[in-house]
Figure 1 (cartoon, rainbow, N blue to C red):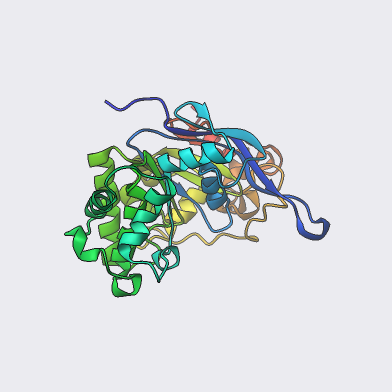
Figure 2 (cartoon, helix red, strand yellow):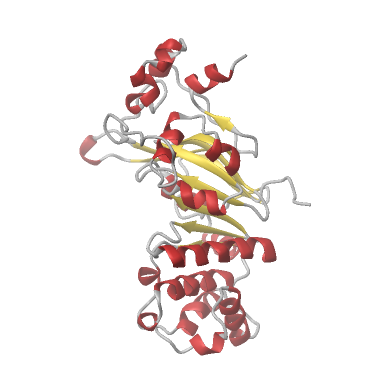
Length: 329
C-alpha cells in the first residue's frame, strides 16, 4: 500500500524575477501547491512560458523561492551547498535534449560515473555504472561503456541520461520534456521505461511537458499550469476524459485523437509581468468569449475576482468560476 504522505511538496510557492529596465517584476510562479507521492508519476502540463520549468527548477533546489517552501519527506529544503548536494542525490534531473546533456568527449561510462564521483561513491563504481545502464535498458551494459554519444541513437542517448540519474539510486526524478526530441516509436519506449522504473523500483517522477497526450500515457495525476498557477489538477483519467477548465479543454482539443473542433485561443500569450485581475485566463477564454460564462452568471467574476490556490493533494480541483458554477447543484 502506498504511503499517503507526499514525498516532495511545494506549499504556496512564489518565484518572481526582476524586470529589465524598470519593467514590472515577472511572477513566474505565483502561488502553487503541488505534491508528488511515493511511487507516483505526476505530469505538470502547460504552454511554453507558463512557469512549469521554473517551478521544476525550484523543486530541484536550483531556484530558491521568493516565498513559500519546498519540503522533501516532510523536511523543508535547505539551500546551503552541503544540504543541496545531499538532496540532489535523492532527487535527480533528466533533461529534454540528451545531445546537450552529454559531453561529446566523454564515453558512456564516464557520463554515468560522473555523479558517483561528485558524491564520492565508496562502492564498486564499475558495478554501479553497469547496474544503472541495465536498469535504463542498455544491455549488456559493458557493450556501451566505451561508446561516445555520437555513436548512439537518440533513444540510446536518452537512456544514458536516465542511467546517469539512476546510478545514485534517487527516490524521485524530475524529467523536463524527456521525449520531446525523440521520434514517435522511441518516445513510447522511453515512456515505458519510466513506467517500469516506477513499478519495479518505486521511483517517483515529476514529468514536465506541454503534451497532454504524454500525460495520458504515463501519469497517475496531472497538474495543468497557466500563467504561474495550477488551474486544474486530479487523477489523469478524470482530468483528461472530463476536463473542467476551459484551458485544459483547449489543450486537449488540439490532440490528434480529439473528436471535436480545435479550440483557437484568443488574445495575447501570457506575460508573467502583467498578470490580469480576476481569472488569469479570462482574456483568452473561449467560454467567456462565447457568452457561456455570461449565461452562467459568472462573467463579471471571471474578469474581476481572483481564484484561490488549488491544494496540492490528490483530490481533483479546478480554478474556474464557470466550472464551479456549472458543477453547483
